[in-house]
Amino acid sequence: MIFNFVIFLSTLIAMEGVGFLAHKYVMHGWGWFLHRSHHEAQLGALETNDLYLLALGTIATGLIVLGNDGYDPLQWVGAGVAAFGLIYLLVHDGIVHRHWPVRPQPRNRYLRRLYQAHLMHHAVKGRRNSVSFGFLYAPPVATLQKQLRDLQDADRAREREASLSDLCGTSINSDLQNG
Ligand SMILES: [Zn+2]
Ligand SMILES: [Zn+2]
Image 1 (cartoon, rainbow, N blue to C red):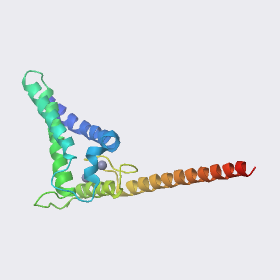
Image 2: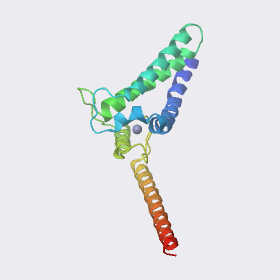
Image 3: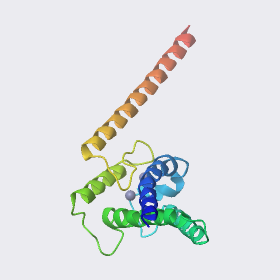
Image 4: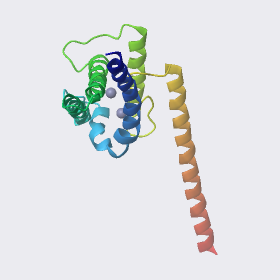
C-alpha cells in the first residue's frame, strides 16, 4: 500500500515537471494553435485548449485500465496523472480563471501565489516571452517580474540590433549606388 502511495505521489510531483515542459515547449511551441484560445481575451466555458486536458484524461484512463488488467502498478501512475489533472482543473480553471458559476477566492498564501504567478503568465500577449509555465509550483512574484523585465529587455536589444543592421545595410547600399 505504501509502495503504491509513493508511486502515486511521485507521479503527481513528476507531472508538474512534465506539465511545465509541455506548457513551455509544446503549448507555446508547435501546439500553440490549440493553446492560443486560452491566451485570448474572451475566455469561454470551452476552448480548443481543453483538448490538452482531454489528452491528459485519456492517458490517465489508459494507464488505470492497463494497471487493472495486470500491469501493476500502472494504475497508480494513472491515478497520479488524474490527480494532477483534477488539481489543475480546480486551481487553474476554478480559482485562477473562474470559469465556474461558483467563484472560489484564493485565500491562503500558496493559492494566492499560484494565482498571481498565473496572471503574470497571461500578462504577456502571444506565445513568446512569457513566464511561469508551472501549475502547482510558482516562483515568488518578484522573481517572475525580474524574468519578465529581462525577457523584454533582451527583446528590445534584439530589435535595436535588427533595425541598426537594417540601417547600416541601407546606407552601405546607397553608398554603393552613389559610387
Ligand atoms: Zn500558456
Ligand atoms: Zn491560464
